[in-house]
Amino acid sequence: MPTAAILAGGRASRLGGLDKSQLVIDGRTILDRQLHVLRRCADRVIIIANDLARFADIGVPVFEDLVPDAGALGGIYTALAIAKEPVLIVACDMPYLTAPFLTRVLEAAQDADVAVPLAADGYHPLCACYTQACATPIRQRLDAGALKVLDLFGDVHVRTIDPVEIAAFDPDGLLLLNINTPDDLARAQRGRDRTS
Image (cartoon, rainbow, N blue to C red; front, side, top):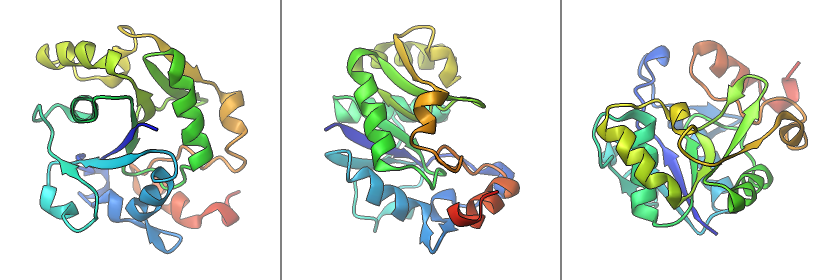
């Protein structure tokens, strides 16, 4: 199994700078939930963050971005450089990911450079598997200051996980929820049992 990397370097400006990994959903932090899930589908779990001290007591290795101020694309690059193998990338604000779905993402990457969910609301590039074939194209984009993750997909072979595939793992529509705004947080805190 590959490495899984939680990207936790964002500023969470739309949530007043809250540490999204420490938001509590259904009695557990998102980080605790993700570690539990990722340990079931990866040999190693790491965290990519700008504030290493914040995660010092978590019990998994924490690494700082190799290319400062390069956003999520820089975090993906750092994870690939550290892992030397395919990396399952997960944003730290996705509380409802499941091991069966993430295993499907990993399987889809076996014949592609990137495997990424493509849901009704678009791509989810921070819940995707990136292989080592992406490292050089990402580095070239970082060096050019081209930091948009989705633009990378024009440079590599992408396998999408389409809405039909996603639906088999997502009966309540929360699987790919990521928390960017107070409304997202409220929806996540309502939980699976109370989703309309």
